Figure (cartoon, rainbow, N blue to C red):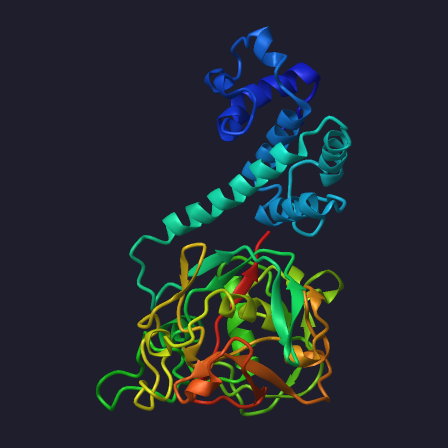
Length: 410
């Protein structure tokens, strides 16, 4: 992206590019008809405010992917709370000129005392809602869910996680995308090339049920799947498995992978799990946020495969009603299979902003177990709830246990 030089050049850029983007909130909606290279009437130039200039600059950074929805969301929240605003992150921003240049320019605009913060906040929220709408439109295409993992964007707000008998405040400061279903047997085969699931067709009718969730895979096998999917999609893997020693005779492809020693690391600054770039397991907080987004009490038969309607087996994903967030569907969150999450139980996790318990699975010599969320096809009705979880050994898979992946959005 070329550096914008000089006041008049920037004004022309603003009038030509961003007026169409911000005309619903900016003071100069009529300027959208002027294109780069055309003469702009002076009375329109005079109407361009410092807020218009800042919106134009942010618009161009966003369009060129120099900043993402994460930064827009951060800015919107900072405006609500009066916190300092930082849009540019060295870890996520990849631009043609040094990011410090953009930081300096943004700081200059943000320090202008005449900024209309109400207008800026309204524009930011419009952009985020438009991004969510665009995502919904993209997902309306008829995808074969068994072959193509479908991810939906989540822009979380503050919510409460249960601690004892009280809901304690939690805030996820990053948007993320989550699979709309658990990983299916077909997804697993396409990435790993094997059939680990307990539930398979009878002899002569194929080796898998492609649309059923993959199950009977260990925690470590799920991490390998996540890394392989990241590599396939050109992303840096979230997990660094290089220091782990795996048990001889176990296999990630078969879902039996076990670890005998070593330490798991995350590929992110300061090993901040939320700053990884690749696909990963969700945290307790990320999973519970969606569970709490919609109350299904009294409607379990419509939303969940559990012991009352499952006939003792898994079912095709996406065949019960979905939990919806911003109009986007998330299936089987409460049941079909239980699902791995990354960190320890929320009962032991410090809450607040971006809760995560580093001791699981970093402290390899400790419990060597992680919680699972949702309820499997074996679950009783009383086990279905946003705070309910089981504990699962990292070294064992079960026929009612699967997983889905998330990815932190830039």
